[in-house]
Image (cartoon, rainbow, N blue to C red; front, side, top):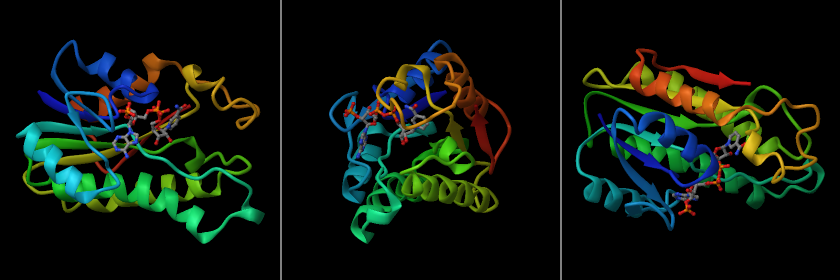
Length: 199
Ligand SMILES: NC(=O)c1ccc[n+]([C@@H]2O[C@H](COP(=O)([O-])OP(=O)(O)OC[C@H]3O[C@@H](n4cnc5c(N)ncnc54)[C@H](OP(=O)(O)O)[C@@H]3O)[C@@H](O)[C@H]2O)c1
């Protein structure tokens, strides 16, 4: 398959690339890195990426930011960071991508464990992660031409433990290999409309 991976140089994206590249052609995309640059927060940039990439069999998104901060101090503007970036960036990737993915192809989005296991300061991330689950559940039943869509929801990666030190008390980190396999399951398997939870 020809697979477009957005966020391919990130911590999660590297897991997806490592797991898929032995059997597939990978087209890498990122904000500053990769074969193609794209900013998922800008619909025109997504359009330009698809034009540059040409037809693909699968699109994998491993990018998206949310706001982390205490609920009592959170502003509407801060809350919209997750909505506009992690949620709508990936939703727009699908809405525009429908015309660029081959028959029987797939979309795989990325959310995270805060959809089911909340932490302090994570209300924005929990909200958009759960919204992504709702989106793939409903989008799956309207996917044209045999296409599928899922969202991978990883726990805290072992490689990100230091970066998020103190934010995830008691969470058991997940390995890169396990996270990579979740992307393989979504891209090469048959499931659709599902949250593939790891950890
Ligand atoms: N790390 C974890 O433990 C973990 C666990 C669960 C869920 N997640 C979720 O997984 C996603 C990726 O996390 P990560 O830890 O891999 O992040 P990361 O290491 O910071 O990597 C992010 C990747 O996405 C790209 N990117 C960032 N903003 C972008 C934009 N606006 N448009 C296009 N590409 C963009 C970056 O490109 P450049 O390299 O070019 O800057 C980079 O390749 C996030 O949504 C995160 O919430 C992460």
